[in-house]
Length: 279
Image (cartoon, helix red, strand yellow):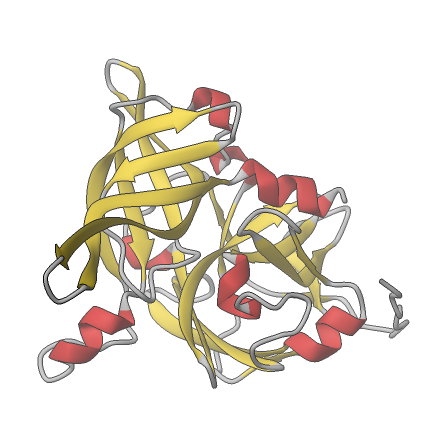
């Protein structure tokens, strides 16, 4: 695939950031809502290799037709306390078409993971950043809650039976209760790691996911010491495991297949995102 690299002079600016290696006081600050004309999904912001990336499921941005984008423009909403005393929403628009042409959007060809580079950090101070061309803030506050590299948990450290939090924006559910709950607010679920196949690099959690959860981060709860609790991201929601039930009427010669949510969810290991950074 031919890549076009765009050279643009960008002034470095100092912006209040919050790089966190813990879950934080307000869990709303971890997931990101991704909305475009074809739907919604979830993601998170990670600092990797001195840049800030939006990390999400590939199908949230591309559907099943990568490298063709579902929409050239997406809007992100996240919560942060950076630069303020209270947690508030931060909204920005990203020109995916421009970033893709510049080589700043990368995706796995055989896994459901995509990354978008949105900021570059100064080599001297990660709090000094330059926004890439194609990034436009729509909110007055620009401080973002960015997860530090220390929160990344490799698949070999994922423990079967460990408790996990699933973060995201299941708009297919919250849209049904918009009279009492804002669909643009995240919802958390808690479950466990049900199984892991290191050979196939697949993680299964016992925690139901719904449309809108795709791309959201899954956090493992760890206790490295008696009085210590640590939270690390093990992967991204890819989709639910379906339960299939089929009945057949042999007399009439027809059958009916019913698919429902089994309550299990497939998670793509977060280290695949790291591999895309170094691709």
